[in-house]
Length: 178
Image (cartoon, rainbow, N blue to C red; front, side, top):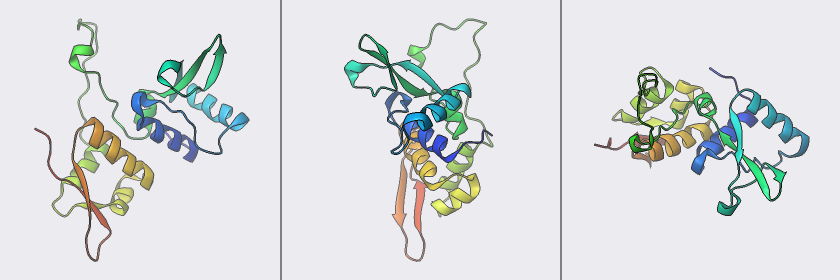
């Protein structure tokens, strides 16, 4: 498992929740030399990549390249995997025609933190954030981002939360999609 600093985890988690996995804007207080150093290391490790910014869509800039052009930062599949998110695969219609040399499309793997979290959420009694943190080792903001982004938006699972008397907030998957 990739070891991340708190700053790297925050950048990747925030980027994973944005359209197109855009990692900009960076967290408040991270700018100048500290930002360049942190981002440089993440690019070297393959967690982020610089891509052309679509200024007409209002994408935030990481740096200007001249002539009104610039780049922004995008979370890579390796960056998503580092925070426990299975990268979203393109729709079948968006994939190029398959040849024998093309790799097989991966499926969800048993024994992953994602599978573990889904099993916890499917239990009739539900699960608390504290129990998920204990099981995965993630921080609370990563758990919430994963439930909202990966489970809710990418996998289409309906994650509900209720406040039960004598217990902390309890989360459940109310119904798996058909």
